[in-house]
Image (cartoon, rainbow, N blue to C red; front, side, top):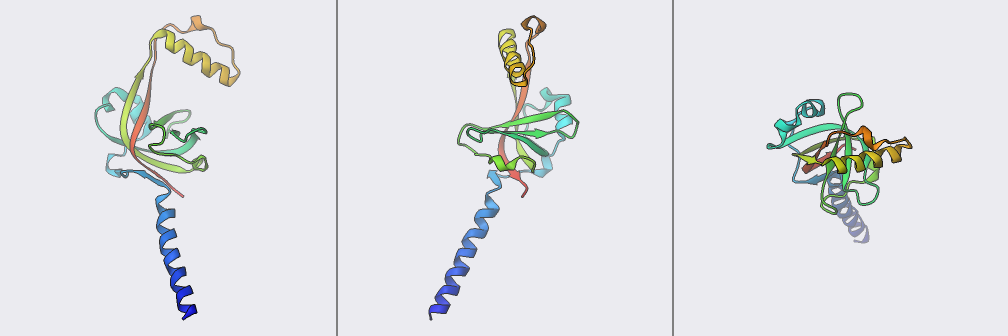
Length: 156
């Protein structure tokens, strides 16, 4: 009898743990692979993708170290990437996701900055990279793009 209870308890624990580990890499309402667009295609003409949901795929090259609220996905084109951003706590991306493949479905969002904001952002990036920055070198405002996901899947 004791052996049966032990076996039953082990099977129950196994059944409970297996789905949890499978769910740990999926966030939100799921990924729609039918909407797959290469990041390079998206970034070549981002304004045309602002209204409709898209799915991107790539290697995770950065993760928010504070709250797990964003990830950066490498493009299929060298030196190009796209940030995935959620509200704090909505999805929490693990730091261990770096280097893994991800799929994300959501809507592309344009972040439009005025000239002063653009100078501040570029000064921050230069400081982070340990580079000199001349505010006079910035003559036009910039627009940055990010994907606001409804679903993300990180491969194990």
